[in-house]
Length: 192
Length: 195
Image (cartoon, rainbow over all chains, first blue to last red; front, side):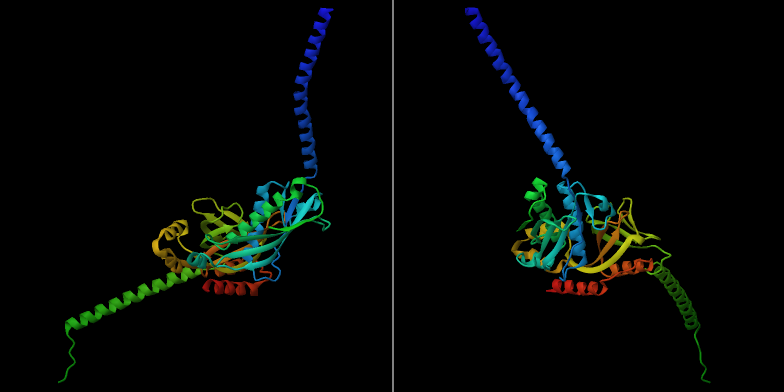
């Protein structure tokens, strides 16, 4: 009787140990499968983006600025690694892609500055750019819309404003909830 | 009675003068010939490659941003060669548009900026008033093999961008539009810089 009780307690102990050992090993397994399923889901909804040329919308914005914004946007979006591929405007390879978004950039405000004025006065001569960035699907549905600023206030040439602007646009897209979910939901509008 | 007497020494010096004049005219003729040879390499003549010093600001294929080198128009390509490195080139046929602009920049780069910041009694600001230089900007729009649009911006010495543009036109680049705006833009930027 005494030995059977002892055996039972030993069996219970062993069972508990087995359960204790099995649980943590099972939990990482669960997270791994969850991770892999999330990864596969994300890869399933991985989007590519095509950067359209900048629309200056009747503003007196020089072509060097328009081209610089466009080139910097391509570079900065590549750096974020948020998109499977970043295409340029007019790229024929986008024709067959199923998950393609189009980034449209419209310049809303441009304040031309002067490097000399910045160097002499410090407080004036800033070059400022304000653009409206939109991510659209092929069907024209807007999934992301923001107003983004870029400027150069102290050091650097006027063209540096375009680099700062492109960096801010890429950062805004990366930080947006659309980017984290990868799902097409209601358009996100706002201002940075 | 009144004979016109020319001294021997005077006639000798006159002859020497003639020799000098002949020598000088020969030198001038050679100089003018050299000048003509130089104008042959000027833009517009597509037989000789045209090249000029330029700073690549951004966008040109396989080239580092803000690098200095030589921009040249070859037979069928536009080439930018960094100092001591192999050149990157783009087919002239793929160039869609060329735009000109003007910029005023502070000279001296980062060392000068630091020096101006460290100068006492606002001396650096006074230096900044005079330490700027006007440049031309040359903006190119070209397409790659997949049809994707690229843009490149170069900074050249004042007056050189027009020469490159003319040479590109001579090589068959068609400037599609915006010509009036290009000049207007330059004028506007210059106005802002002069403020």
